[in-house]
Image (cartoon, rainbow, N blue to C red):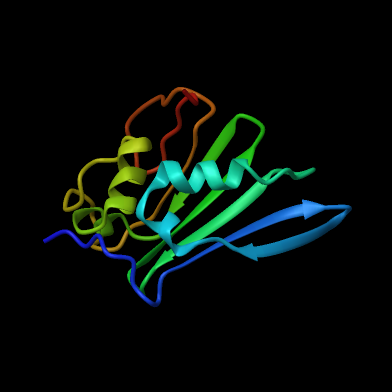
Length: 130
């Protein structure tokens, strides 16, 4: 089973710095369906310190994205969500994580920065932006 519908408890928020203070706005929840769409939405917002986005899918998992120049950093709260949710699967594909079920814990998170080449496959990996 793959869950693709945007639910009523899904959310997406952008946080950015403007005139020396942090601002936050809601994004359309439709960006929770696609990682590229979420990154594009974050890149559209100018900011003196980059932008940060949070996308939550129900009570199941959330993704945090930080855009700073050309660097994109990702955090996925639960790698096992990649089995059922396209957004989580896109994050694990982007950071080259092993498939769910190969981890020592059933609930594992991953953090990555796309600004250097990975030295070895781990739960936390890095790579260059495209």
